[in-house]
Amino acid sequence: PISGPITANAWKDGLKGQVQQFPELYKEGECPLTVDGVNAPKMGELYKNEDLGNCLEEIGKSYSSFYTGRIAEKIVSTVQTLGGQMTLNDLSSHASEWVDPIGVDYMGKTLWEIPPPGQGVAGLIAVKNFEYVESLKDGLTSLEEKHGMIESMRVGFDVARKRIEDGAVIDAEEGLPKIKADFKFDKSMSSGAPDKTSCTVSFQTFDSYGNSTSFVNSNYMGFGTGIVPPGLGFTLQNRGAGFNFEPGGVNEYKGGKRPYHTIIPAMVTENGAFKASISNMGGFMQPQGHLQLMVNLFKHNMNAQEAVDVPRFCIRDGTFGGMVCLEPGYGEEEELKAMGHKIGEGSRSLFGRAQVILKKENGVLEGGSDGRSDGSAG
Image (tube, rainbow, N blue to C red; front, side):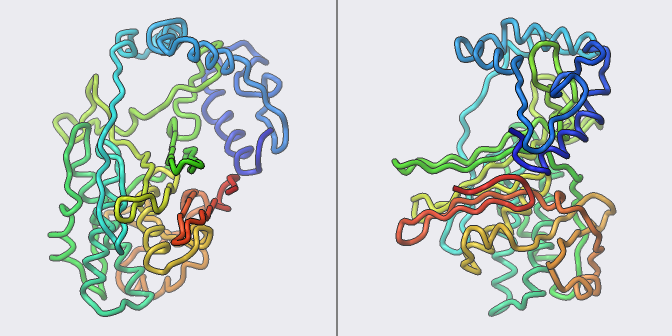
């Protein structure tokens, strides 16, 4: 069953705006990812995807099918039919990597992120920068805290856009020279302008043995490319859009290379032990959400659900100044404007969808799930 209205509406929009843009891939009245060959499933409606079920059974027997077998052949032939350059060798030569996370300390906790080409380092830089801002005064006002987090995030994105690419090694302190040189409590800086995007699925788990998982998955831009290879039941991802298409630049588009990636599952430890599992889906909102969750949880000692529910800011694409969208209830909008921040509005989905599992001092686990989406904690 389709769990809620947000999922149902996004499915309907993605079907019309993406999947149905490739009518050459299916017969009239047989559009994939529909309940009747035409329409998207509605909230509460049962949806069956036999093609995807068959693929998963096949992969369960031999994952090589996805990279060298029937599924791979279907993917490649579909892409080539539409004029793409993909070959079977692109799939068969793929190799996943186990990577070491990168982290920074804040309020006696350590926030861990995936290294580049993921954008987790943007969040780490922001956390480190904000820690510096906090050191400048003995107790920040509410306005100073909001201003300081926004400016810290600007610098995080500034470094991210200039440095993140496949294989890059970036230290979380790379943003400190800029924040130390340019930060002012009464005036905004201008750095970094992330694009608006929100298209992701996440879950956080913790089992009886103390193992935790922070999982985020996305095919980008809603239904990715919108391309559904006949008989497979899933859309092809569109992560190549994260490349820089200017020759010679950082994150330049090349074969065999991973693009700048928005997905960043995260963990928090305390003295080497599990403290929290967090995510904040929503494209470039993700590192901004991680910064705000860290401050909410460990500076203001909010419980998991409170930390998720608090109104957020989001720096979104628009101008060199980096327009800041404030969620209703965030507060002090006029004061931030007076500092030079360009303030805009955004739909609720712009601010992402967070999930948190927090381990309390007594060992009790708290869960928080975002009302900005259809998820739940339990």
